[in-house]
Image (tube, rainbow, N blue to C red; front, side, top):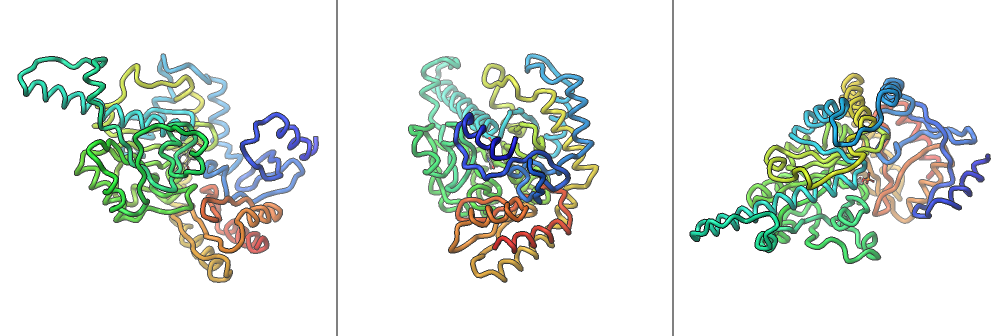
Amino acid sequence: MTSKEYMDLTEEHVLHTYNRFPVVFEKGEGVYLTDVDGKQYLDFGAGIAVFALGYGNQDYNNALKEQVDHLIHTSNLFYNVPLAQAAEKLTKATGLDKVFFTNSGTEAIEGAIKAARKCAWLKDKNAEKAGKDAAGSCENVAADDPAAEEAHTNYELIAMNHSFHGRSVGALSVTGNPHYQEAFRPLMGGVRFAEFNDLESVKSQVTDRTCAIILETVQGEGGIYPATPEFLKGVRALCDEKDILLILDEIQCGMGRTGSWFACQQYGVQPDIMTCAKALGCGIPVGAFVLNEKTAKASLVPGDHGTTYGGNPLACAAVSKVFDLFEEQHIIEHVQALTPYLEQQLDALVETYDFLSVRRGKGFMQGIVVEGRPVGEIVTRALENGLVVLSAEGNVLRLVPPLVIEKEDIDEMIKRLKASF
Ligand SMILES: *Cc1c(COP(=O)(O)O)cnc(C)c1O
């Protein structure tokens, strides 16, 4: 079949929720993708910040093949070997205590929201109970007591404008993009929006009902905005002061992309709950939300949350192997070492071309603001020139390459990008 025929067949049967570029990829090798016509593309998109290890990594592939032959799925009614291994490695890398594996980033956000609300609900219930006790009543507030339900008043979340957390109803409700939300109202209630990198704006949204603040350490879809240290530390301090949970969405910026396991570690800020996905399984669909001890103890218990696939042996074997390979191949050190060169080359582009105004980013998560011409045009031209780049909100050219790129890949990217201008 020709690529045109594959495209037509796809459009005939797949719900048209994406305007796809006219390329049919067939295989990958290192940092290059090949389409069905044999044309090669240097990949600076990595399947949207997913394929960190590059394509055709034999150690990774073999680990998956081995797991396929052992066991693919068991359900969460039982224990399995890769689950234990992946959970140990992820909690160690995050510095948090308990993990729940999901099948996507969106589901990790859903779980984080539920964990935060459960925490708040228990706090309310205990406060209610303490109040009654203080008044001389020994009445126990059972979980299904309407009084306990009424007491659940601190359910509000604060999210950021221009954030992106996913497309399910819950995740969409904390996604600060009216365009994505418009047709699907009413969404989940109790969400207030603040300005990213504006601590006063966040403070102004805090009420006595606030249970959690959710934000990306580096906003991705919204246009590659790293949090400022003052902002992130300020939000952490605010949460501590008001007994509010901090949820950091590290789905795009985590897993080594910014030069540390998780971006928040460069700020010295720990969340109460962290969400991961994208590069966590390097292409196997898997996400996770990870909680600190305090939140884990006071939130979800059996009956509160579940998933059939989540944490299955195949997905966890991928996660486990990704952690091993990151260590063996010194991926994080590599990102740190090569970031100055990447930034230097991109800054030189911004200086050279009038229609490029600003570079923003951290590590291998970089954005360049394009003025006066649609970024989509550049992305299309780049594809014609054998280069995959992405865009983000605000007419931003987004570069999120595999974390194994070398200096010559950066040079080649710059060459192909220049040709596309
Ligand atoms: C991609 C992304 C999500 C959603 O993850 P999916 O795997 O697409 O469900 C959530 N938050 C951020 C920051 C993301 O970049």
